[in-house]
Image 1 (cartoon, protein in one colour):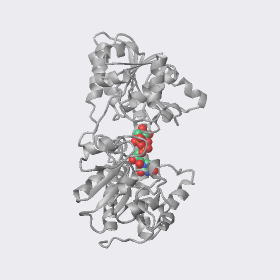
Image 2 (cartoon, helix red, strand yellow; image 1 turned 90 degrees about the vertical axis):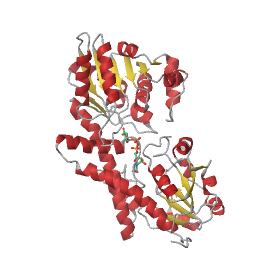
Image 3 (cartoon, rainbow, N blue to C red; image 1 turned 30 degrees about the horizontal axis):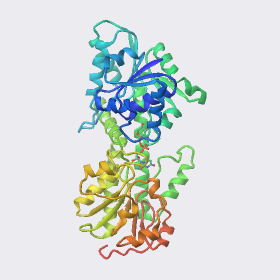
Length: 443
Ligand code: UDX
């Protein structure tokens, strides 16, 4: 079967490459000629483990092609995936202008039956809007279906998430569209992946409800962590014991500096906005977002309390991306915290395996360091903000010799607190008792 994917951003490219891996013929379209030219040379425009290899495999097999030609993309695919961006507006609502433009273009270029699928996370009702726009821009009346097929891809493990998903959600109104969509995902029947078939608004809601629930889980454990600090409890043990209850589950219960990335903040704001539009106040979603912002500020307070004063201090930051195994800095807590520390007149020596180059273009005050040891040189404290593997097994004797004061703020709770204190460090983490001796005279 031939399919087309409109948009070669994160979701579009992973979707296209993975469907080619499933044996489908995929044409990926983007309006950016430079991006398409690079993709035609096998160059993937962002870091995602395994994606370059998958794109190259798809191109070699002849099943994965790239174009800037929208008419060709509309003609090519029986199924057309819309995977263009839906950025957040300042009021939290999603900006649907790219989706609208694509829908109008599909309508005016369509000459035969198509299944048009929204893959981007879109507000409830968007597929309906896509249907109306296609219909009103058709030059000849052609039958088509609109389907919602949300993605649940995590950056850093997107290929595994696509090829071995927990579930596939298909929101459609016609049996023909459901049959075609099921056919696309046929390889997943072998691994018995559950397929949820429902109507379009329910499919759209599943995506928001899933993401905002996960974000809420994180804000909840972060609040528990903050309380643990007040009552000398240990959040890691609390989370472990909570997670053993199968009704709760152990995932997304890691306390830290709060969630970031392109999805959770945007989707939480969008759900609040969708609630307002529908006349229902989504209070938990609202609070989840508020607690997340507060958590970032608390991390800055924690660093200030540890060092006494921030003015004039040198701080080594380990990790800038919003999580490991990505070069994505969007809405990263680490970047927000680094910016606050710069504003408080700290010198920030930062290291990140994939995000450093872009980070210094956003925050030119950052002193770019090749690794944790360079970041530690002359530092009053090291702050671990993103739990890259490179930062999980540091040589603390070496770090101690490089630093002005052996202090580690482990804001991802990576290390065993007693062990780090054993190296002569003052160790501060999130929701766990601090260990070692604080040597900062100002604090
Ligand atoms: C998320 C969803 O997981 C995915 O299903 C959806 O399609 C897109 O959004 P992603 O943004 O790639 O994926 O990252 P994810 O792994 O979910 O982490 C999001 C943020 O939460 C990161 O900043 C991470 O550090 C943070 N997090 C995650 C925690 O702070 N604690 C946890 O326990 C888990």
